[in-house]
Image (cartoon, rainbow over all chains, first blue to last red; front, side):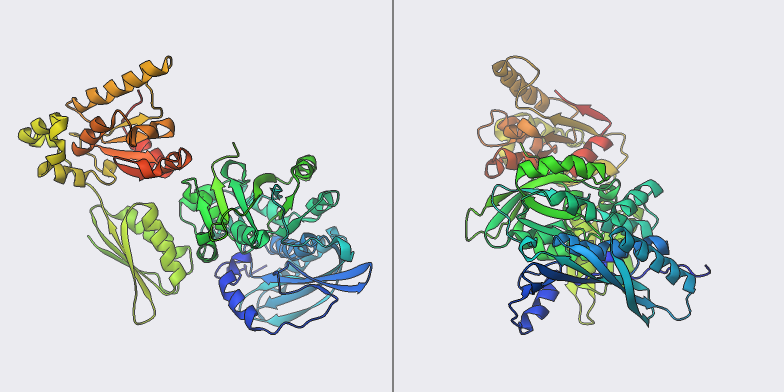
Length: 348
Length: 235
C-alpha cells in the first residue's frame, strides 16, 4: 500500500456532534406517531425498534466515523464493532449489515479492501451477514455500518429505567478517546495502544449474552458522550447515582495521557454538557477527564440488581473483558437539586 | 518574557499541548498568549492553566477567535524572611503579635504562595512537612494529641522552616476550627510557610466550612510537592 491513512481531525466517536447541539436540532423535528415504533426519539435510544408481529421486532442502527487508528484492517474492525454494539445494547440479535463508505478517489484501493475486510470479519463474528452497502468519494476516509437485528418486543433493553438500589455495571475499561488521541501524537507505548485496540475490537455480543440471564433494568453502550453523558441519560429525571473512583476500570496509560493534557474537543464538549450535574468528591483531574472521554466501541453500561452483576462478572472476565461494578443507583433526594452523579473515592 | 502561540486551525489536543510546551520552555515569569479559533479549544487551554494553578483569562475577539492569556510564574532565589529582617523575625516569634505583622512578612508570603519549587536556591532547601493524622506516633490517642500540639509549637521556633505543610486524612482536622494547633499553624503561615489541606479529605470529614487556615489542595499538588522536596518530615 502506497498511501497511509491520514488522520482526520479526531477519529472514532470523538468526531461525534456534542449532545447539546444535537438536542436542539432534534427537538424541532415533528414527532411521527406509530404504535409499532417501540423506541423513538423520545429517550435517545441506541437503536430504533419496530414491531412487525407480537413476537418479533426489528432493530435498526447506523454508525460511521473517520479513522482513529492507522491500520486500515483494525479500523474496519473497530468501526464495525462500534456499529454492531447498538444492537446488543438493545438486547437484539444481529442479522444483516450494510457498509457505508467515504473514500478519496485517488487513494490506494487496497486500503479500502483492508477496511472492508475488517468490518466483514466482525459482522461474521457477530453471526450476521454483510449484505451490501454504499460508497461515495470524499476528501477523507469514513467507514461504518447500517445494521439490522431482531428482538422479541417484550425483551427490549431500554437505555433508561434503572431502579434505586441497582448497581451500575460497566463491561469495558474507559480511556479509548484519550489514548487514540495521544497515539496520533506518538505519546503512548505500543502495549498501551494494543490494549485499547483489543478493547475496541471486542464485540459487546459476549457481554450481552451474559446479560440474557439477568434482570436488566437499563442498558446502553458507552460511546461519544462519554460515561457521564450516557449515565445521565440512563438516570432520567427520577434517579441519581454514586460512582466509586477506585472501581472504575481504566485502560493502562489513559490517566497518564490525561495528566499530559492529551484532551479531545469531544471530551470538553461532554464536560460542558454534564458538569453542572456531577459532583466530584475526589480531586483527581485525570479521572474527571476519563469520565468525560468520548469512547469508541465502548462497553455496555448496565443497571441491574447486584446479585446478577456479581454472578456474571466472572464470565465477562472469561471473555477478556475488564468490566466492573462502578456505582449504585440511588433515589433522588432533593427535587430542586441539579446534582445527579456523585463521584466518591471508594464504595466504603 | 512573553510568548504568543497561534493555534488557530489546529484541532485539540494540539493547542493545549503546544501551550504546555511553551509554559515548560520558559526560564522566567511572563505571559503566554494563545490564539485559538474555537471556544472548546479555549476551554481546554484554560483547563490546563487551572490545573497548573496559573492565572488565566480568555477574550472572545471580534474576528471570532479566542485569546487565552496565561500568567506563568517562575520563582527565582527567595530569601528567607528571618535572614532578611531580624526585626520581623523577632516579631513573628510571638504568636500574639502575628495578626498585626505586615511589611516584609507579607511580601514573603506572597512569594511563597505558589510553587516555589521551580527555583534552585541553595539558601532555601525545599523541606516539606506531611501531616497525615491528628495525633503524633502510634499509641495512646490523648498522648498523640499532646505530642502533635507540641510539634507545631516547636516548629514555629525553628530557624529553618519548611516551604509547605501538607495536611491529609485526619490531618485535615488540624487546620480546621476547634484544632488546638491552629494558632501555631497560623504563625507558620505568617512566617511564609504554605499551608495546604487535602480537599477530598475536607469533603469526606465534612470540614469544608470549618477550614480556618491555609488553602485547599488536591492530590496532584500533594504528590508534586513531595516529589520536588529534598526533605520530607513526617512526624
